[in-house]
Each structure stands twice: as structure tokens, then as C-alpha cells.
Amino acid sequence: MKSVNRYSILTFVVTYTLWGIVAIYTQWKNVPFGSSIPLIVLYVLGVLSPAISAMTINKQLVSKEAFHSFCRNCFMPPKKFTWYVLILVVTVVFQLLPYVLFGGERSGPLYLIVLQFPLYILIGGMEEIGWRGLMQPELEKKWSPFISTMIVGVVWSLWHLPLFFIVGTYQELYLSFFNFSISTIAFSFILAVVYQRTRSVFMCIITHAFLNSLSAVFITGEAWMGELISLLIGFVIFIWSQITDRSRPNCRGIRTWSL
Image (cartoon, rainbow, N blue to C red):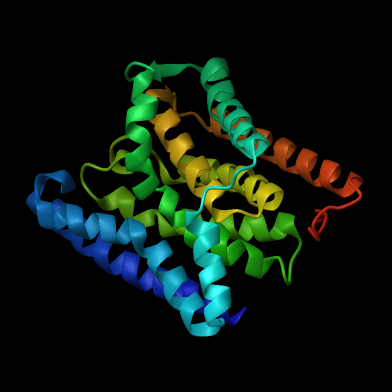
């Protein structure tokens, strides 16, 4: 747990400091963060803090060979085609089912999902190096996957809190922190399934980026019922994954879920 504690402290200190500066300035001047290159740089560095912190902590605490293995797991695409099908299916179901049930708006043509995808690898996807690359597996050494995922989801939600005070962010313009937190915890269960099924941080990165890109085009109307449906979907997919994983002869040492 030493690595989790160090990672959490470093990530929150760096992100809250950087985003805090941006929030204070944008609130004081009443300007969006995108209006200034220095503000954008501070914003992006805050986004990358989980990745930078995880790499820093891992390099300090593990062997050189283990660190190189960790880096390969983060940046080398796996060759197993069925894994890509898995993330496509679960992400589309997770994002589009609430959209269909509760409505929303479509912000642009479908090709924007592809065009925006590389940007969302940087702005969002790279966070997974910390959350699923370091925190999730370390927590699972002590807790069940279910409890570990809940912890990551809650911590991950709190990490986003400064964005609600930065003028011009999507969170500040359109979301409430309560609904956002429910959605974030729900997405944590989806990402936990991807990680437990693939043991690939790279797959978590592209899953995160794909969902961000998809949700930027298919914007679900914000309602607490819609967020609860997302949470239910996350639970169902997670439980299905745990049950089917347990039923296989070789489950790669993944612990089954429990409360």
C-alpha cells in the first residue's frame, strides 16, 4: 500500500496545485481556461499528473526490469483482436444505452469520434497509467476487486473536483459534481473489467479515450436517473465478468468479487 499512498498524495498535490492556479485565475478574470496558452499548459499538466506520478513512484519502488515491463504494458498495443471487440462493445453499451433511454443531443457527425480519439488519449486516456496501472492492482492485493474498484472510483471522482471551478471546462459548464461522481464510479467498473480481462494498461487507455470521444458526440441529458442507469450497467458488466472469469479453468489469478 506504500505505492498507493505515495501515488495518491503526489497526484493530488500536483493536480490540485496546477488546476487550483487555473481555477483562481479564470474565476478572478472571468475568462475560460482555453483563452491562454499558459493556462492550457497548466491544465494539460494537471491531466497528465496521474501518469507522471505513477511512472515516478514505480521507478522508485520496483526493479529496473519490472519498470520496463510496466512501461511496455502501458504503451505497447496487444495483438489479441477479441480484446478490442470487448472494449468496443462494453463502451458503446455503457454510453449509448442511457442516451437512448433518457435522450440527449448529438453534437456532431460520427466521424468526430475518430478525429477526436487521439486528443482524448492525451486528455483522459493517459490517466489510466495511474488509476488502473498502479492503484487498482495494488488495492486488489488487499481488497476484493469490487471494493478496490469502488475506492478507485471515489478517489478518481475527487481528483476531478477542481475542474468544476475552472471556467470553460465541460464540468464547469454542464455537470454537477454529484452526477459526475456517479458516472465516474460507474465507468470505473467498466475499466476494471477491461483491466482484469486483459491485464493491459494500454487497453484501459484506449477504452477511456474512446468513451470520452463517444460521449463528446452523444451527450446524454444530465439526470440522476440516467447516471444511476450507467452505474447499474457498470455493476452488471462487472459482475458478469467476475462470474464468467471464475467459471473458466484458468482465470489468470484474478480474485472473484465480493463485498
